Image (cartoon, rainbow, N blue to C red):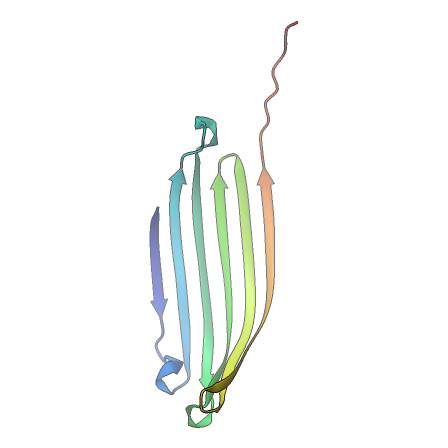
Length: 123
């Protein structure tokens, strides 16, 4: 498997300021099946980006992110495509107590194709 990943957080919210972020990857590889006809290769890529806002006095964070990904499997053929939009946040209530939440809307699409070969049978 080969994978390349890139990240960028120019104004990381973890440093008590607001900031955008980006993350992406590209990967490919292959695998061996139980029998030679089940060997496969795959490619995948995806990215996500968002923005975080620190709450006053560093007491929490709210943010949003959007991302998508694609995967292709070549045994016969299959594709998966997805997109997600998320809103998240946390807030310190007191001491070691905090409230955390996430709302996400996702969409996935699957496209699978398989080839079956039937031969003749002599009796």
